[in-house]
Image (cartoon, rainbow, N blue to C red):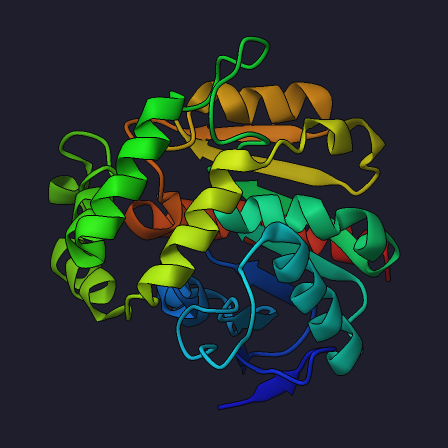
Length: 275
């Protein structure tokens, strides 16, 4: 399994499969690269997939300092530098989408297109942004993590899917097994990343994005609300949106075939335009 070294001298893990147009996948809060299993299995014959574990997550545990979006973005930029990546399709899910937004300005000349999955520019609601979770919900999540990080994550998993969505999937048992196999980050890392989510507002970045952008989201997402995805579509110039009916926060799991079709169509189009 490959590793790369960031500017701090920390070793971070990533998976590298397939060949062709490079597609970099950034996972979400408390997850790891393993969550992209259906993309690694389904797309490696068509594109090159690069799937890192974020700092403090998965195998990337030997890191120092707090976890925040500046650090996550620096690691992503360092990965592009170390692997000499160009004409990349950058895919970010949930917190990973915010990392993509954070890094988009510096990486814009090296990114052919960006896919924001179940995304929001601001996790918590405010007077001028009602499309986030109430501040008390983020505070409640923090208290639950402090009491028991594993129990809090189990509760988070139940909110990933719309009512009946997981049960109606043909991959129900596999998805449950996959989620259960993802190692829980240290509690301090869980809290740092949660604080970063609760405190960050990226709306000011949106109108400067010039990268072709595809927004994919579930119509019944309870974590990053569908209205937040629509807000991104309306505020990123030229962005296109595709909504998955009867779907929650993780369309790449329960609707993996449709998700992969949308992704590969977009990747081929933007990679050909940048050839």
